Image (tube, rainbow, N blue to C red):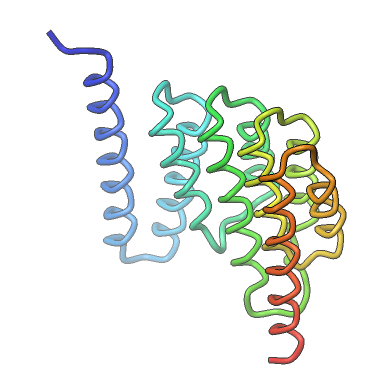
Length: 190
């Protein structure tokens, strides 16, 4: 008889196999339009898994994959990630979503001294989640993600972390503030 834990592991493994198969299919598509369609389908599948997978490992994997995207960041994707950041029952999934939002921001602005086009919306998602989040580890991860932004409004969110009641969140805010300053200095000085 299979235990629920073993079934969950099998489910997570099958989900990962599905994602890997989709990625391999994406890489094997020769035409650009077909590749774009395959990437859009993989993106939709990952967003669906982020919201509907019963296994938290599968939701975390979907969040991580979404954070690796570069060209396909859309307003709808950010809204969907924000919904998971606010509503997922597992704090590790919420933290993974926050990390992915930070990664997306960093990828959008890595070769520029200015903020990426989607940064204001992503910051709004993070700020809303931070205000409602009860778990200090997730709040700390949200603040760390804010440190990856070049948008000046990131400072407001980081400053909220500096006065948080939890010492771990305050420490994350100090680190995020320094990280952001270093990133901006490098962007402006080359």
